[in-house]
Length: 271
Ligand SMILES: [Fe+2]
Ligand SMILES: [Fe+2]
Image (cartoon, rainbow, N blue to C red):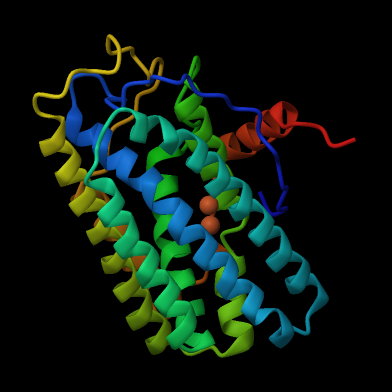
């Protein structure tokens, strides 16, 4: 699980998929949908921050990792954009305003904050994601017969584990400093989780009385997906907040490697 493979995935999504992706559970559904809506704003910002660090990185191996990180994130947000279009077709007019606000935040961070700040935000996101991915997916992923949406999530999460060291290493290489990383990282985690919570809340409300795009289909078929509880995430967050934390010491279950191979085999082959 230490190599970073850039995969182009062939996922296709139905035109009129209903965004209630966990049948009968709008709260869980929209928490996941809001997470997907976040990414085409957040991941391009991560890429910008990493690219801005390029000239400061004189270690060729780290530079290669940085490029692969950016390439993976580029594939992630493009695929989420494709899926997010199905949500917009289902009719949630208030989303545009939330997205505009978020886009402005990330544009402002790139323009006004220091490289060190932006790299610390990036690592705050990556450490949080790595912790959540491990909680949700280990030991063996979401199961068989997944919908295209859940396959997208699983592929994305596997790659988050593959590149879990990069933002940390680039921050350490370019500037370093535990306390600064901790504080900006916690701010970042508050910033994007707050946006996700607000959007999910709006969608739950807007969904009341909305006619479904089509008969709800079990889109999480075969999956044992459940949103993580705060009490489960908390000890994992404490770990990433420790001064001794490094993603290099995080162990990943062998099942994740099996999934990485599965998605490599499924990826579009370049000619
Ligand atoms: Fe990603
Ligand atoms: Fe990432």
